[in-house]
Length: 124
Image (cartoon, helix red, strand yellow):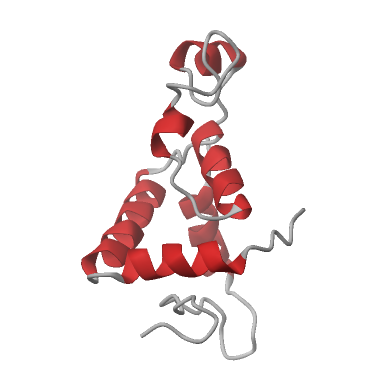
């Protein structure tokens, strides 16, 4: 069911304790899930992640994967490609989130359509 704003709520987890603060262990877990690697200029150029050898975007990994419906989505995907996760736990967690999203028929399409209707890029 899609709410009036067109964006269905995501199922999330609350990592805060009863006092509203995350525990040290939960903070460390979150850090492990979000730890990223930094690709050097040589790797970025050779792998054509966001820019091809002619300075354009055609044929890059970003060009192939970017079907985002919003400006923030485009920027987040670019950031993820430039700074890939470096822990197995983080990678598996992201894969499971995608699997959950894709496991509900029509849910991804509902999100995409809702985000296209928002039309406002608050970061810009």
